Image (cartoon, rainbow over all chains, first blue to last red; front, side, top):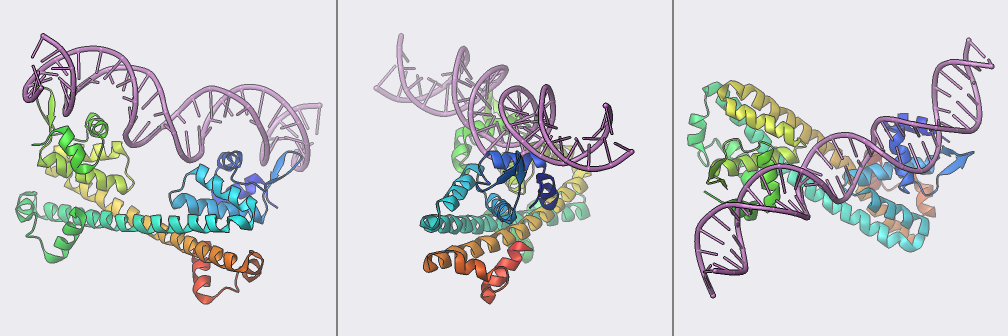
Length: 145
Length: 145
DNA sequence: TCTTGACATAAAGTCAGGTTTAGGTATTAC
DNA sequence: GTAATACCTAAACCTGACTTTATGTCAAGA
């Protein structure tokens, strides 16, 4: 069993955030001893899931819904599975979007590197949109698709 | 030249958002005719860069700083390049984090699939943390690292 | 003419996800 | 015994990124 302060250190989260999550219903099994929260392994695993779902783009209230399903028992396995499937898809789509963003950033890095070498953007702008070196053209096309 | 309404349709952004960006200084070269904004190719390219930098995690005021550098001319090429380099790194790190998140989500999908087949999580919890099928163990370890 | 639609501004409102504050309790350290 | 810590609550506050509202201008079509 851990105190809120210990969990705060373990997860690098402010104590206020943990209390906020608790208030929002994200630790449905949280125990207390004379008013003081006692985090068990169950709450630590909940916190790992919370962080995962948050990174997947889920809002707090939807995470709360998930925790409510956990309390309801095996009858909600299908809902829980569907949630993870849909978050998996969302993250896969996000990674594709980020790859395009990355291509644009790489292109811009090359662009300014070249502009610095040339002293101006003039020669560069003559090469746009389709007389770039092949490697760079790929980035440009990916980013402007 | 395009009206704000046309640009709104082209980029699937509300008119109010475009006006907000303008107010925040994100279109330093924006022209007007009798008070009405006229978006040129320059503003469209600015908007592409804005979307890219936003997706990379930059705040509006930092994007505004970038636009200010653009107005300053070639002397700020190094600052602009450094910005793109640092956003590139940030996005690469974000993609690594998302990969871990994805592994966790995939693990949870398998977990609930199995729980549904078994009718309970009991057998599953006996397998944790290191008696899982090899494929799944990889996901679990990646997610809990 | 009159009304409809696209444009404009300034200022207030919204929302999520916390954080801070004010006030209190309980345990330990000196 | 008192001072420092770690904990507690409720409620107010904060921030970023928009959005909405209230009010007004202007050109084109019926």
